[in-house]
Image (cartoon, rainbow, N blue to C red; front, side):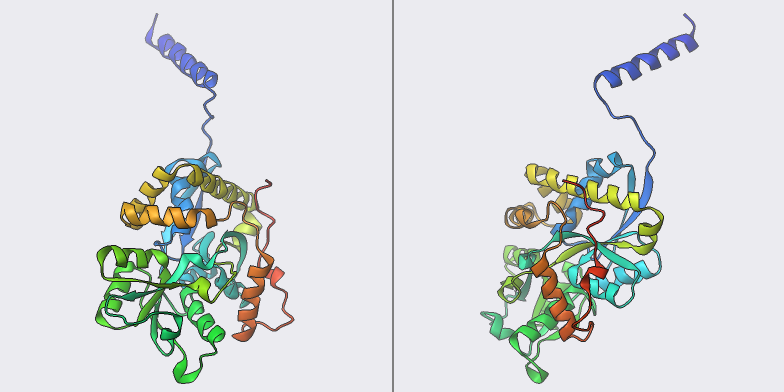
Length: 325
């Protein structure tokens, strides 16, 4: 038997074996640029899980992950057509209201428990009232963390010299550690994970989580650029199908999720496991927007003079692309 005939038969045999095993046929993938407002957010880990375990590839997508330094940077990238999908804070819906060419397409997490105020070991603060007039670190101006300071002042009625002051320090944990240690800030608005890390290193602690002053909130949201929505809506649908399949994988694979979280974000396995145990159940499995959580956002937008009371919030988000469950 000549070599060419052998090769042909071998190829046929391999193809038959794959078909018998039910292996999926390879398909061409298309690139989708996905931006994270900051890398160090547990609720954005489904993106990395989906990439690591071939879930997005199964849906015909080749994900290019781009990390930013705050939600404002993601909105700028959307305006410049530099990203297709953004993972950012729910309050960043305000950018869509102000004209950024994007729309919210899915809830990632609607629980305020992901975010907190963290303090250094030298802090004498005991509770929320000790934050009056204090400097609180945020990622960027106009970001989710900055909005959380505004909302704290609004809820507590702090104005003028009593108001907590947002100080831009960036989103990297190292920058937040340094700012707390040097006294540049009195506390840092960020993920509760930072507080867990501070506790682990005995350099500080989680003072409060923001559920002490916000009960319901579309905290983390997926956005799509108007360009991708208009030119390739099917890619948006496939992205969300892959995203929620990745969430389902995480819920039934703790060890794998903890490992990826540690590798991607740099947390210890102890901190990553603590995040999983406390927050995994709070990540949305269907992407639907909550009426009360959206009402909280609108109320704050009106108070901050970003929207008129009569404004229709439904113009800035849609459930059209969610998987049909």
